[in-house]
Image 1: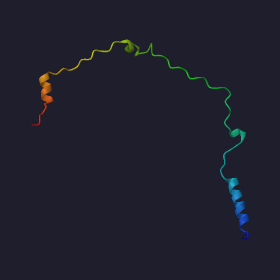
Image 2: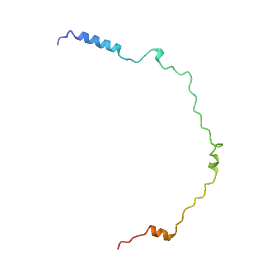
Image 3: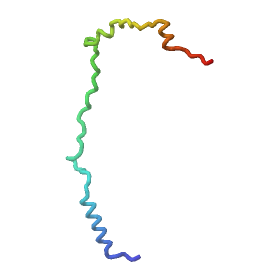
Image 4: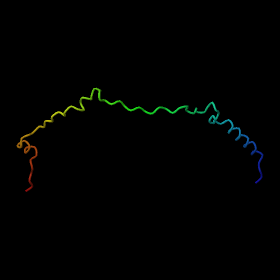
Length: 84
């Protein structure tokens, strides 16, 4: 196949598009600077030994009281039906 006359124009248009297309800046002024020193280590959280809730840690747990129903009341609620 013989080369056509339109091919050089297509190649030059492609080169122009590549030159005018968006590109990532690569100059030294656009680069992220290298850190001069390392950042400090993270600090530990303060203990809450002198805080508002510190007394709760050492206070005895409150006594839990349960409702104790009578056996007759339980039989009324959970009446067992026998199949006969």
